[in-house]
Image (cartoon, rainbow, N blue to C red; front, side, top):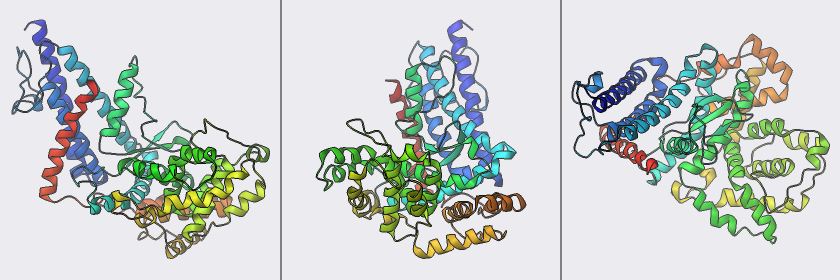
Length: 469
């Protein structure tokens, strides 16, 4: 075997190893009850990465590379009709794409692998359910409206722990570093873009929020970012915010700059009501002089309004939705009776209306509140569940997880010390984990839908090659 043939042999063997791991994870999530929640996620991620791998290194011969084979003396891997062949005479180009496949899968393997750590498993299982409860209504509404094909729809979000100070969702401006030594800037960018193209939103939660579920309710905010991106809402809101009925061009520019974060706040409030405001209140609190004196000026407005202005926006949104603020307004304004951006206050109802009154074509013309919104009765159930926590009773397993997390947040902020005393005796986490329904998330597609999805996943996997152009 000459050196080039040996190089191709090694590449074929490495591709076979990766294919075997894909098969192992697919079997695991299909057969192991503890992993079935991740069945569709693993199926689709490995299908797309497998199609990319086939396009790069060639499909394995029957009974050969897929099983770890690959004959000696092979000059290049076999390439089926329709697949993109590896660059002739350039095994290093193929190898770089093979490394890319390993890097992407290593990232997802690490996220799934966090669930194998006993001290993290239940927290992640529960927060996964929260993220799904918030994302699912938008996904179902978009599929029903026909704006996204069932074969192309994203899978439920996957939650992980990360080294950040607050939750965040993988996005265009938050490209995740795969932490490889010597990786180039272009590879980091390519890695981040690939994650956005693959069929699963990733939501990261700070490590220090482990064993403190009341703060995890802000995951609903991050799911809002994923909803805006995944269902194409940004082009809908862009002209609406450009035409905001605000006399000052300067202030209109500011609200435009803050739009994405405020959209996520609205979505968090729709999913978890005042629990979002309670968690945000604790996160934004600071010395009175710091918050009251905070002033942002253009033209670089940043991503967020001042903390006081942001909380006023949250209170106004709760008012518009007819949901109680659970004392958050009184608590906040007592701590910060004044602020330095008072000229923006009259704009707030107009901005809230822009978010809540705009028909959204990706959802069949429904408004955002028509996609998902806690009702007054729902919030009554949240209060009831918070009382169960206070009285050291198990949570009602029949309630949606966004309501159960909201109840945990409400119980904590009502009396933090009593919450922790109660949590030590009868952990809220155990009660939440017991409420997780068995089986896969959502409905499995019909046979014809599965075939369409398989074709779409193969096309999507091959499309990743464009990142190397």
